[in-house]
Amino acid sequence: MNMKENKLLHDLIDYENDFKYFLKENKLLKEKYAGKVVLIKNKEVKIVGDTIEEVKKKKALQLGIDVSKSVVEFIPKEDVTLII
Image (tube, rainbow, N blue to C red; front, top):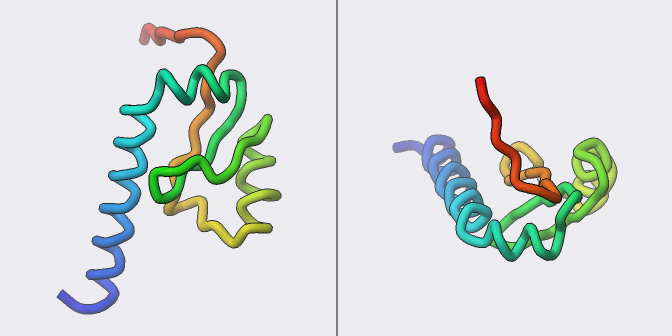
């Protein structure tokens, strides 16, 4: 495995760990950030905003966080069930 592949694998593992954190801590995140958009990096909420655009374009850019390697999720105020 070359360095580029190794870095990609590391980034994917980090993303997976952050997404697992989001799923595991969903109840706590909902209590604290209901109605907000959060960006999670390294198993920590780094950015909170009202819209995805605010989180991605403004705050993440200012902090130098690559949103493509971060978990960005909207935390609904109420449980939502989608029927397709």
